[in-house]
Picture 1 (tube, rainbow, N blue to C red):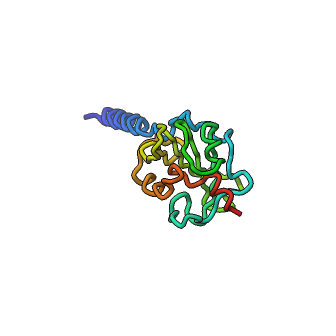
Picture 2: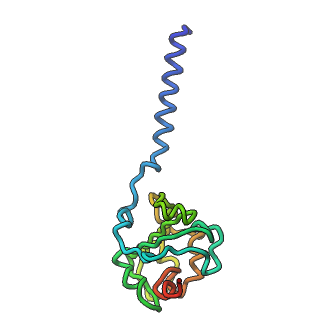
Picture 3: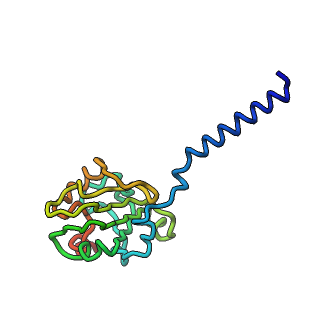
Length: 172
């Protein structure tokens, strides 16, 4: 094999590898789900002060942990229920976005936060974790999650939502 043919073969292989590799990187370029893509225009229920600390005692390292700062946004479908009083039963189509920051400095600087999203996918008289889907990032896909529903089952009496009107009234 001539040296020039060898270089052409290597170049063709490298180009193929690059194209295949880049095609598998489509997730970072994926658009956010339309159900929450515009969440920054929604009602921010933590408008005056972000949620921080671990008021439930169950947070652990989730949602940036005890030291994290969290802003919570709610769409119009969920707004009246979330800002109301118990008993809570969110209508299907309710979406709650939690934007999380590692520190107060990150929150104050408006740095890009991490996101978790709760989506109520079915109505029902019986509160059930099966009525909810969760996404673990802004561009993530909402689906059933044993991890999320496991923790949120602690809030089963509030339709699996921790941040609600009654909770917000207890915050400083």
